[in-house]
Image 1 (cartoon, rainbow, N blue to C red):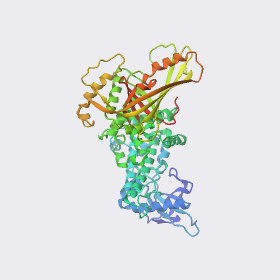
Image 2: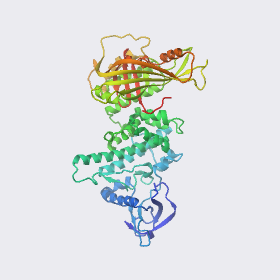
Image 3: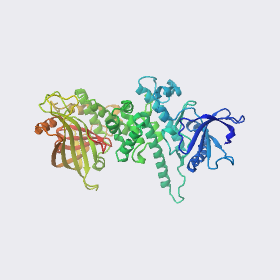
Image 4: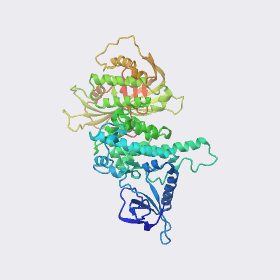
Length: 590
């Protein structure tokens, strides 16, 4: 529709929460034309003062014409574009004013900046039991974590439906940000902006291009939108990321080549320190066996081809409540097993039930190893891995009263390739053990002492191998078995159930599994202390008592049984397993 300035009564306030830019002037008005279907309705006048801004406004009108065939979905998930204002001769001929809907609410960014945004947004959207049933939930109220999770599910599903509506019509949004997405209390839908920067999948493609390049352009544009959706989800769940400085750290973390699957390790160790919201966001993403971290890693995956689509994201367990039974993929099953093992190890309660559960989960992960061939290990192994748990030895302090006290910090295993050549299977393993030697007689309250570092360097060759499972032998459970021998019997019983028969790639417990065999070379050990201590030998002895011996003598590592982009399991010469999680490449050990 074409309007004049005289058709409106300009209100005396600038519109709040409509994402205005430096080249725009945004304010509210009321239509005063009696014959207009918008009579007495509030609208937003967006005066565009530059050539680039005017191009966005005209593009929004073009997109409206293209999507008008399915007007119901357009009105539900996009800000309604009513028309534009023509300029008189006396007006600025370089300005262009867009007239679009006024939904009487804020953008999601403005909502998240409110101190009481959860109850206020619940009331604004009139969320009740019926609303939550639409996202698969059957409860209301409850703890703040449950309420925020239900609210995020509602918002994310609406955003994905709106973005998928654009993608199905051959358009990419290209500008998905929290300040461009608005919440309408009228129809309780998310509006994904005025689509002024929406781009055609097939637009501006040379006539000589083939079908492959066109499909590649479509995939890249969809992947860009999904990455933006991932950043929006991260900010909605992890409130700390609303701080521009912390969000810049996240983008730097990804730009340095770190895999998004290790985002939890990065966030917990770096961003969650002294945060105002505590662990609420981490708890939300940890629920359902870490399903939130899995979805987030797929949305912001490094390779565009690995990013999840809108339709697949809508079927993801994190966005489906308990009432909806979603058949998980093998990837999600592996992720859930690994996340459960990580959570148990972080509790630091290593009694027999916890040790048996950890050994059981590690055994299941080994059965479902996605990369049994050594060539895949050569690509995934290089990096920095933090030791989480050992099935053969209790890590850290025990009830002993040693004469020399040492507090173990992070234990890392850094793996590098000698050459990028496919035929070169040589790897360099560096064990980095940080510790603090307590020089005083009693434990100081602040745990201050002489900081030290113990390093072990060894060269390995990676070859194909097999791990044998000897069923006929009845192994005696020793004093230091940590529950490991019982794990194989329980694992065999577990795999015989109907539930796991549908998941595992074999019908019965195998006699052997392919592994990546490690052949070690020479070992070099060094130790550095920041301060002088009287008995360094006693400190080394105490450190060796508190860590698995394989981290000091790397030649005892014999094979790798599980690896993915996030977790690593190495088996030792005595049969025990070491569980590692991938750490940030530039993370400084504490």
